[in-house]
Image (cartoon, rainbow, N blue to C red):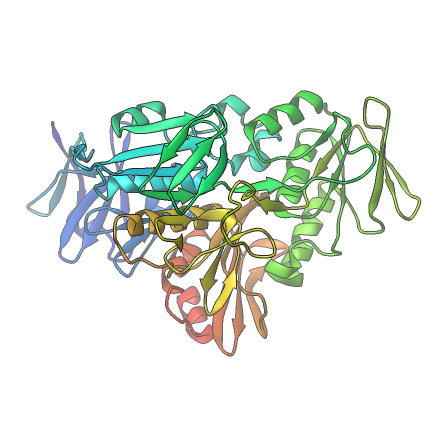
Length: 507
């Protein structure tokens, strides 16, 4: 290993990192008290430049998707990253900073010294995060990961944002973990569905005929897209979008110049509208609400996103509901209850998902078929759940939130508690949504607010808005304000007054 002179100690700022390069490697220098640390310069999740992130309360928050790492040692605190930061050797000589060109070795595969078997049902965001966390936290027993899809878990968030726009080929969708990781960490992947669960006797029965006994199990089966119960809904050009296979089918059918009708105004529906329009299709969104996302983002931001879609040629209709999909062997049109007929070559249904809990007949469920968990993600003795299938306590209420990052956070909490811990969800829910090249960040979970204020114009980003209730920040929404939102992602974990929030933002 060779040390390279990369910076002067005095050049490194107190409140953020400094990116330097050693050949093609980007390195992040951070001040930790009167000491320095050198870490990989790009987030292990999606390659965001960590020098543009925020330092707050001893944590470094990624500017893009709000993964968090301890500045002391680079350890992973919050997903969507699944790895800690690689650390590089560093020396300070006469005020000059020298960094090694190879990261320090951090082999942490636990020895196989535990006789217990832990089963994870579902290998999406939550399931993969849990498997990685179990090994990270030292579990040496058997880990079985049951996956209904053949390939290893992948980043499902890019499907509606980049795959069906033609920007990212389906085969290039990044995996959450490669096969080498599963082999090195002794995580056994089983391609099957769970047919039944006996929580009393701690047994699972699989679709391939296997019966598995477990010491602890995590259910992370995610959601099943809701479908239409209409005449013609079974035509081959009627799609949902949840998996890579779904995306491949859409791309195989879609051709520039065709007409697409999207039924629903969910985040998946509107992201798909953006993507299919960029792919060259004429797109009409048949919406339930006059302003998309008003419930989450408020009227102003919802209208701004609607205007962005309309400026790019998306037709937004709220004048009727679909009653029939017309066509013989192929889609010809969508018929509405007001008599209107929308010509169509393909239909995409984006009306939400239902918790995939049908196999768990002996577990009590909420009205929406989700599983009720406590603050530690526990359903009952030996059994935990995470992600889209859970209703959990948040700020004195019981809620179900379908966020990618939240599912991973819940899974890491469950993994710690499967090992005897007592962790609870204490973070701030976060998600992002992408429309015509603009990324919108959202922090919090505000079902109601009594004040909202913006810095900048939602119709002409950058902007950031704070939602408050009784003088306390309940949520924040922004576009092109990554570093500020990264700072708020940590700061909003404690009660934050609206006035203090604006002082932080305006700096």
